[in-house]
Image (cartoon, rainbow, N blue to C red; front, side):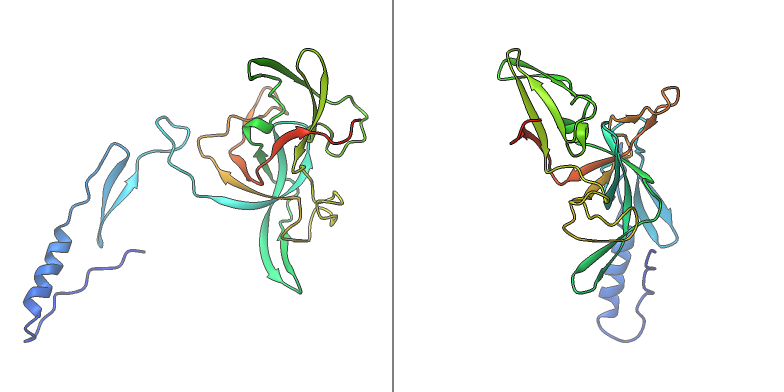
Length: 229
């Protein structure tokens, strides 16, 4: 809410004239428009409003909407389902309450962790990636594991830290709704990207759904798995 300008100072105080001149000068200050911002007048003065809307041309305005989520389901894709953390309280240890809409949000993985990355060139060597065979006992299977090949040999790789859901023993083990500690591995921070993340939910190929949340923490990498299949 805007704060109204104070009324001119009246009375015999010798400072009145100086204060009133300063007040008038402040009111005359002009905010300049630009290609990205327009000037808007209100009864209480002027402010600058962004002209840019994500996804409608131009450069999307930077997003500041960062939220804490708990992963609910993994699906072997470039994204996962999650619920927002809706409350925080202290009860012997800091606890978080997970929202009650199971998998209400879809969150895109960071670019280098996505399953759609099937080949790249590293130090001049072409590397290809493929999924783990069905029936593997590995945790998270193709969300957390892949096979890399440099043309001569295979290397089993895993994501570190692992993707874990609220039902995984290392995630929290509580089920889809309830309390988790702040160091539970199912927790992630994600930022809202109004212009999109480049990831789509293709569950219905005829109606691809853009995913606008992007995981930003924890920072994950692919590493050689310490133990083979």
